[in-house]
Length: 148
Length: 122
Image (cartoon, rainbow over all chains, first blue to last red):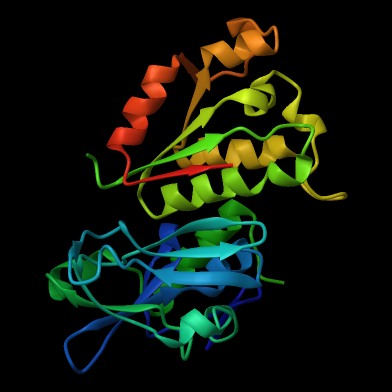
């Protein structure tokens, strides 16, 4: 786990940096998605709700379009899909405990799973590994944001 | 009917400051959920559209002014509509209102309501 500007950011995930979401390909072929530590910070840290879109369940969601909404007392915004895919699953635990996404954003706090349309093709548009994290760091620096 | 349009009718204003944050928050939330969110202001809600007024209304002491909640909604793409009759109620001219507000009649409100998947009133 790498710490960048106070934010935990795993090296092996795939990031859509400007939307602050991560993607993780699963053995099942599905892609799991969630929000990053910077996203949690920007939402205020304590979440009132993380709601996966019921309307979009089983529907195709293009990369960058919302699969869920995040709410806190100071912020409300979308959780965009890092890659194009059919929304097939939501993390049921978030209904009772939205702060799982804040406290364990890469583990128990995952948000949804997509059946990707073109993972191999689209993953090239995501940032990963050491170079990906360097790009994320640059973006956070430009935004003047840190998690601490 | 557009199944992705929602309408919030805002009748609350500066006399009831506690009622003035949540409707905008719901509108911003709807926009985040990718609904086309519209707010129709009438009765006292129209006062919040007066230039400089919403900055002085605090739903919670020590918290954000209503103007912040309104700006969040506008930034998220929520459209604001003011009822022309209610501007007369408050002796407001179109130029007294903040930018980005469309002035419409009551019939337009009914049309928006017909088109909307949900209509809420605050």
